[in-house]
Image (cartoon, helix red, strand yellow):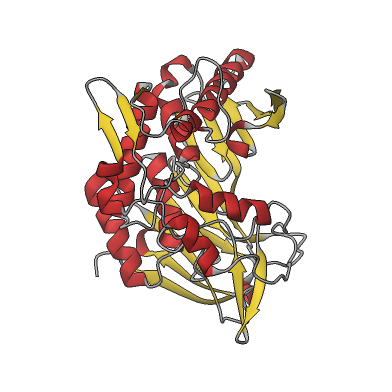
Length: 399
């Protein structure tokens, strides 16, 4: 997320009191890995956890969630095919062939094309080959608790040689042929080469949106976190207090990683992108460049504008938040960020707020200038790492 690793933002507490004023029991759960076709996998290669509330039949509800997550994981998998399923991998393996797909996959690809166009190509779901290059390097690199210095593992030319097969975002309809009546998709080669579809920057949000569509099967309040993309999929309890903790994304060890928290009186969907999960750091011209997998689809690598981007919304689709946090991660100025957010708000008829953590200087990447949307600023409850926050900028989206 990200990977589009949606930011190091975690839900730490939820207090719900029912109409009678009694405290409601919460039951945490997680989805474990399992062997599929000889490969150990977790859904979306992510940590998936959640909490069930008001639950007398929590095992049934948990099983429903787990089954649906595995089903969607297989559908969006671009590396393995499964018996009886036409998934992303099936499409990648059968170029120039018209293939009947499920409604779910058809409309997921249709929306991915739309998001790519809205982002002017920063979101690029046809550069799976570029993601493969980065993942081979980053899988063995550090996590958020360590700082790993390395030389660049490949050149810009190496990336360009793979990226050139991705269609230009305005030409996607000429290379991904979709027949809505028959629900068929045909991939057409570009420059006589095959690109590779990859939902890396959108699959967690897609899964949550689709899970919400099945929410009638859930009788109880349920919060699901897929990586760091999160949504409550059902329920309308009274007197809720949702506290989100923004963790310190620095490459330093802290017993308390809390940077600051936000507390809401209502449910919020959220997605976060950060470079603090898998990374390495390159020294260039007296500056530190963080290499991560939050990639700009135009250049096939991450820009170094931010250390993390967090988006919040009451009504925006999770898939859009998931993609948009990665898109904004690769946009340089507040003016450009505001313009991009407004574009998506108008298209999806929703409202989006943000927290942007920019490195203080090119040499001090563990201290931050914070930009926060004016509407979101009112929910900030504490700031425990003041020494790490060099400036606090409140951005009015209407100016």
